[in-house]
Amino acid sequence: MSEHKIVRDSYVFGYPLVTMDMTRKHETNVQVPDDAHAPMGQLIKLRAYPAVDDHGAAAPNADTLYTMVWLDVSDEPWVLSIPDMGERFFIMPMLSGFNEVFFVAGSRATGGTAQEYAITGPGWSGTLPEGMTQVASPTALVWILGRVYCAGTPEDYAAVHDLQDRFASVPLSSFGKPYTPPPGVVDETFDMEKDVRKQVNDLPLADFFGYLAKLLQTNPPKPEDAPIIEQMAEIGIVPGQEFDHNKLPRLGHRLDPKLALFELVRDMKHKEPVNGWLYWTSNAGQYCTDYEQRAMVTLIGPGLNFPEDAMYPFSEKDADGKEYDGAKHRYVMRFEEGQMPPVKGFWSLTMYDPDFFFVPNPVNRYSLSQRDTFVANADGSVDLYLQAESPGPDREANWLPAPKGKFIPMLRLYWPQDAPPSILDGSWTPPPVRRAE
Image (cartoon, rainbow, N blue to C red; front, side, top):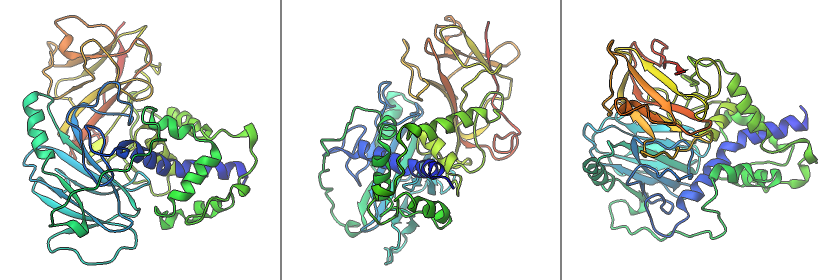
């Protein structure tokens, strides 16, 4: 195998781990918690939907309040306590350092009763308090990316805030005892303003691989990763050892570290869309050895769930195969009568710019969802308008503001219906988005 291919494959393999750790740094680089950050081990409780100018993590949503925590389970387990959530939809997926889901607590998977989990690290052995469920993490780095449904009204914000305040995260040695978390250690050299994805993509190749080698010391690869790990050793990347820069080929200008990502974007655009929508119903959340899909998902936005928990169809081209352009065209997405997204949780349609961030607009509306009251057509169908200007007072309830330029719409289907019609078996598919003129 050529050195160029080994470098490319190694970059694709390591991209999720480096991105996850860089995301961790961004979200935990504070001394005390605020609305969007908290030190390691402390819960981050977003009290409102992400601000339009918040570029901390790609593909934010305006449906749930993130309730999450970053853990390091290399020294001892951590205990996550979930309160009684009743009938409110929530999901608490636990992700490894490689951006793969290894356990899910939530409305679908475990129900809404109070729950306690001990998250243990690689190689841990010991005893746990009676009644506590052990969840073994394959890596020391753990991201519990919780989401609690919220209608966005002042009353519902207050109700969700109360639930958030009853979540708890403590080291096992402090469980059942008074616990005061220590203040976080702030890295003043870390750029808190620069987009995490850009920080990763801007890393020089040698720095990227050095970072990856260090992370692999406590975030071991899976047994099935053995072939790629053997290849990585040829260019100086060995888990548990310092990166050997001398083995890295002198590639000069022949390989940009971002080239592999550009190739993935190109390949994704060649994937056959369904009515113009791209999505996966397999290998989502866990990817086995499909490192390219794992890297692509991470590039778009870390934290993809299992399909049975959530689906995220997104569209880069309209029904005619043309890229969206809000400066030149207006678009319509029509749901025929009885064909709104079939879900047991909820659904929404979010507007993003080409980098998967919210689009500023005069009405501060970033998504449409089933909680909205839409104006139906005479035949019972519903038209959603994706355009830069208002479609008029009589249709503004169905308006999802678009930028005067390129954009990407994304559907969210939480807890999709498992019986027909269902996106899981293809008996329901997202309708196409067509030009209005």
